[in-house]
Length: 158
Image (cartoon, rainbow, N blue to C red):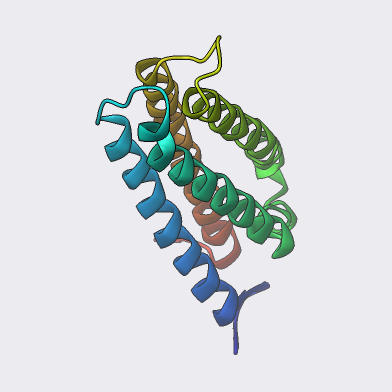
């Protein structure tokens, strides 16, 4: 079912999928943040952190793919060309975030397998918490972009 609002079409199935993805992503981010607060040494005790980071990496890939597949940014740009620069900046951040989570997974795996130059749990935790803060900012900016495009489309007159 699609709801037509001016020139912006909103697909109900897409909205439901995005809502579920967003919920799963938030839960994983919270879970990894909680795990980062529990000290872990090298070796098998690092496995839960590694497994959660694997899941988060996969969920981020799905999240970004959904946004790309459904034209999340393209629709905003088409409806409000003035938002083009912001949309391009936010879209480019997806690659940066995905590469960063892959690097965190690799660092946690080094800790798990007791590799000689493995980072400490503390350094992985700090990196993740910084990632999490920046990603939350990114999500807020995406939401603001979509709302701005929607407001331009339907008008927000007095």
